[in-house]
Image (spheres, rainbow, N blue to C red):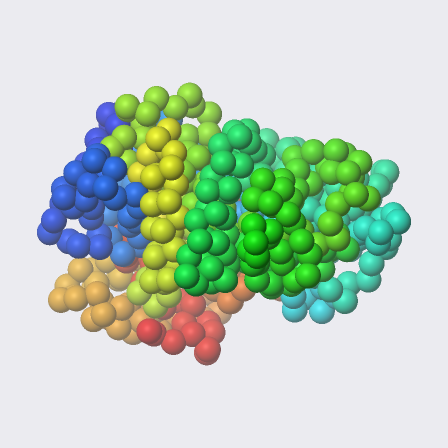
Length: 499
């Protein structure tokens, strides 16, 4: 089980929080925030910056102690709408990392609801969380999937991945929103404090509408308006559930996408709110559906990530005192998974792409200039993949084996001159370790390092288990842990290469 440790007392302010983690300074650019940047935040001359803690020498134990001790901070773990029962039971393979990061005061699941159901071949849609099915004791039970056909809700086959908020289904009862079925099942998992992104953002609907209107208008005014508007709307979802990538245009003040006119800026915002409404108030959405446009623009996922930071989802249960909690910057600690945060340096995650960072800065700059009640954002990305090194209580033989690997990595990588050399040394260590533990390490532990593995397991899963922190885990730096995970991923997937 997860180890209990004495909490260290820290000041509540963003500056004190970063100082307690040694993340302020000019000596390690990219690993710390400079004093100059903090001054720019304070003067509102800088709207956005970010840190990837997987690239730092901060120890896992220190990070966890500081996060748990903070009276307001509860970092979101951005999971998806779908099946969380296997995660709660400790039988979800790699996805067990959600339980490590989103319990015991370390964070909470903030669920992205604008995903898509999996298709029949498990080749499209969300094949990790499988929202079109229920997972019961390792078995996948397909749900009936119905969407609007213009007259009523019609049963669909699984030839297409369908936009989850627009799908209706049954779980031994009447027809209801698929998101509501999953939300009800998640609510029964009391170990977690779940939040749904649409619900959290719609709590301040007036500000959400204002921000969307400002961003849409600013994007449409750009010389490259088509590209700029893609940062606001990346997809279009039909009421039939089919999702396509389309471009939005503004012509003579009228916004349109793929032949569907949405009208004025205000009317376009009204339409953009509909997917949020479909999750938060599905009965109200269904009452309106016959009069709605057949195609609805969907707010882009990267923009939703920024909104979750700007709207302080890392303080989910606290009244925000800006002077002590979001100034001179709003510290958005965020647990990112394999795609988002990766396992540097082998895979830095999509958030690290220069285009993503540039777009995030542009979004925050536009918002900051137009909304005095919103403060500059410091996005602090924490790689949840570090918890892939935590074996389970059901596989006691794994504990000492993983602890031995951690001991070797800590000793060898500490002697490296630079991170690239350290990565090479860790990969060599892992290859030797894998040969030594073959036949002794559990298939369940190794299966978590298969790419894109989800809640449905190929390896035999325990009925239930608890995550166990192996000896030395808390003393690893986040960088060392990420290198170890990356080396294991590379060894288990021939297509993975060092960048």
